[in-house]
Image 1 (tube, rainbow, N blue to C red):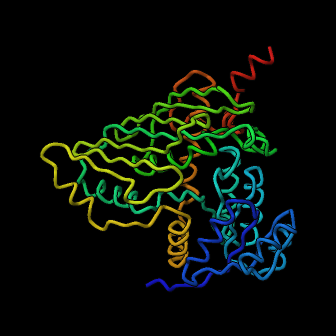
Image 2: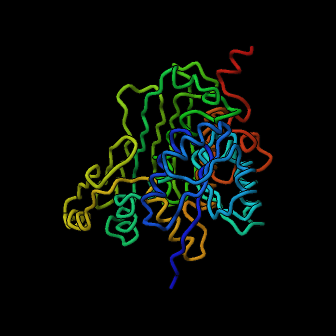
Amino acid sequence: MSQRRNYRAAIVGTGGIATAHANAVAASDGRAELVAVADVDLGRAKQFAGTWNVPRAHASLTDLLRQEQVDVVHLCTPPQLHAPQAVECLEAGVTALIEKPPTLSLAEFDTLIEAESRSTGHVATVLQHRFGTGALRLRRLQEAGELGRPLLATCVTQWYRDEAYYAVPWRGTWESEGGGPTMGHGIHQFDLLLSILGPWREVTAVAARQARSVDTEDVSMALVTFESGAVATVVNSVVSPRQTSELRFDYEHATVEVEHLYGYTDDDWTITPAPGHENVSDLWAQGHSTVPSSHEGWLAAVLDALDQGQAPPVTAGDTRRTMEFIAALYASAFTGERVRSGQITADSPFAQTMEGTGAPWEKVRNK
């Protein structure tokens, strides 16, 4: 039987998302304790530390790791810092919990896998929607065969981000954010899609810069086939005034759907049984919960895994499959070709950067 430990945690980067991480630690029932924070803006770090009663604040991750004894570090910094900071944590034997997107490229993510192989620490990505009760129930019923074969799915992230949002210097560029809504917004929904439907086989995609004055796309769409034979559509947008996050799974025996925005509860899910399979509605209703999908549920799963001496979810292997999907989507969109799983090898330009051979709108501008 695994023994519950108490984990010393730190947060690096005290911007907006750091509050969700601090809330998750505070809600861990004493399993984790926030002992330090760090930010390049030391004044902001001290203010955050005061708000959350954290004993010490530092001006850098390097200072924090040198002066503190910590078990896990929550990396809430801009995307271009994730890889070097995660490697620094791993080299110190500390588990790195990385906000999405975990790295700027597939090649960069592979450096984390290599660093993890040499470390007593682990690396895991914050993709909290995998751990809401609705997603857990869906996986359980699917694995039990109650829903029949998955046939068709739709995955929609249609959000709205105006020009003021992109005034933050690191947003909207390949060099600092790694991509547009495919990387930084839709990843939550299609990661959940991939976690339900399993290995993907092929991607055919388009991406466009429709309305925002950014280097990256502001819209992408993909057609995906899975090893199971299921097919899916994936839409990612930051130009949609009516915002929504939607997933729909059509199985042989039922349609299962969720519609929310930034987090769901069981009340956001519906199930529609196929004729003759009305019993799946009763199975779905069992264990109804009002707990939202959140960083709290994700952190509880992380601590459970660490208690058992295992890599925390979402593991490096889990995340790599999602990152490879992103790279394949961009490769298909920018080359006009269908891209298969495993096709983005280390020497591919789309492994080195999600922009790969270059966005079509940049090619037009540079002519």
